[in-house]
Amino acid sequence: MSGKYRILHTSFWNEDPEVYEMTPENKLFYAYLLTGPQTKQCGISTISTKIMGDQTGFNQDTILHFIKHFQDDLHKVRYNPETRELAVKNWVKWNCQGKNPKVEICIEKELKMVKDKELISYVWGPQIDIPENPGDEKAKKKRLLQNELIEKIFEYWKTAMKHPGSSLSPEREEHIRARLNDGFSYEQCIEAIDGCAGSPYHMGINDTSTVYDSIELIFRNTSKTEGFINRAKRKARMVPSIAGKAKEDNYNWEEGVKEENEE
Image (cartoon, rainbow, N blue to C red; front, side, top):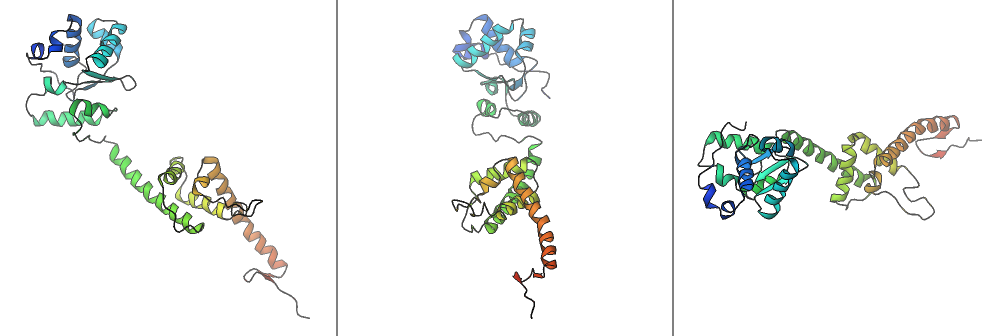
């Protein structure tokens, strides 16, 4: 809730030399930024240049000129055209007079909704604790759970590929995370590792005797991961079939040797 009133101290017109020397149009625009209906108590408002033009009577080209002048030349505002958020540098100086618990609660709620977090430190200074968005807590828990899965997947890969000394680098972590974000489950990631480990070619039985077992390869992209999962599934289907045929041929699957009939 942005409130119905905005307080602008009388010293605003004389205290700042730059304000004192502004043209009438610039003074009007600056006062509008501090007191207009779009303003919020946190000093960062969301508004389009069209609405600003409608409310002040200036056309959009003039509004854009004002914003550029106040941002680049006077360093009194910062505008993000993508989020349509405008921050006033001296907002705290001209609007926050004394401490009011209700106002502070309102400001904290408004800061949580700011999309461009850099605007918060621009208005309130670098020491302010930027509050998290309401949905951030849920996202934080999801990421913590995902981090646990990434560690488990990486540990499984180390064991399966016999790389006990390997470490979970940011690059490796990002590859696994990307596939989890694509919708692959923990079980499917394990299957992909098994698919690679069960491939003679990737284990070094190739023309160059090169082993291709890196976790970056397994989780390089969606199609690569799907390919290793399908490889693991095919192998799982083949084992019972081979075992059945071996039994018919009097093959001891347990021992792995051909039984000879005693004469």
